Amino acid sequence: MYNNELYNYIHKGDIQNSILISTKLILNDKHNKNFELIENTFIAICSYIGTFISIYDIRLWIDVVEETHLFINSDKIIIKNIYILITKLCIVCDIYMKNPISKSGILTINKLREKIIDIFSENINLNYYYIDKFDTVLPPNNSETYDLSKLIIQGIIKIINSIENIGDDFDKLNKIANKLRDIFDYLSRKTYKFETKFQNSDNDSIWFLWGILNILYEENFIKIAYELFMTNYVKKLKTERLGIIWGMTICLIYLKKKNIARVWNKNEIILIKKVNEVGMDLYNDIKKKFCIDNKDYRDNDNDNKNINNNIDGLEYLINYIPQINNNNLELEYKLENTVNNETDDNIKKIKYNKK
Image 1 (spheres, rainbow, N blue to C red):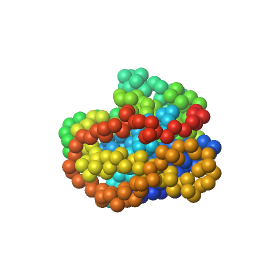
Image 2: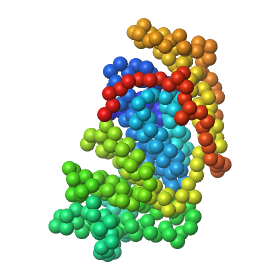
Image 3: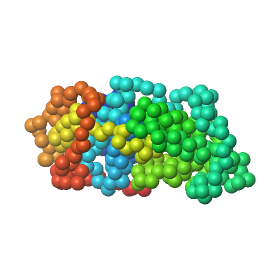
Image 4: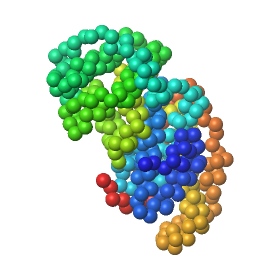
């Protein structure tokens, strides 16, 4: 469902080859198939990142999810924005490469149960306020999972409320966030059936979890994440997209403790800006080489006269890129003239039959 080569390069944090492969897919998209592959690849990477992202780095994940959603819903392809998105995805994947931790989706169901069972040890009845609030996700009261669903909601609320008096203790907040992710990991992989109004055509547990997130999350990002999850969705994509649900649990804690999370650091910003600066040189260089290797494309392309034949943009980027260093130097950033101020030369327009 996604392009394995592109996925593997981004997964490894290989910016150069990720840009190269994605550009070739765009240039060689004769039957409007490669664009969907790129979409699914970016979504799969966002899901992969959601399996390990910490509360400290969660704002980076939110950024790439929002930009992936923007890319998918745009009616044109803006080359430099794609390159910047790829760069950011690679940077966040590189965080895990340099500091690997246990990811969600790895532990057995039994091991996960041992980690979370204490949360559900107190059989406290969900009060009327919460029963009313979660009406769209609670199964009918004669359902086999009605009592279980109340216990789950009570446990999740208990975890979220537990952070109120913690302050900004990163270790404690990260532990709580990961425990919440473990709960969603466990429930999303169990075969419990929940009849919900949120998704009345399917009783898979993932819709029960999305419904809970939708009620608990008070910002527009829940809609963006859900739409990303649902893009080109078929049931066999469920496993590879669960990381989006798991990552959203970290966002629930972030909402309560926003100042605990960092932004892109100095070295990351330098790298992103450099890709922005050389983006069109990169595209022109890759396109030039692609045209040489693909006669059919060369004969039918009317834009070749605009190719810059003097600058080897890919070679320039390869020679430039420094080691990514995730240090503690943080600052807000703004990429001038990249998203909203593209000129015609910076845009490759391709017509697609969108859903």
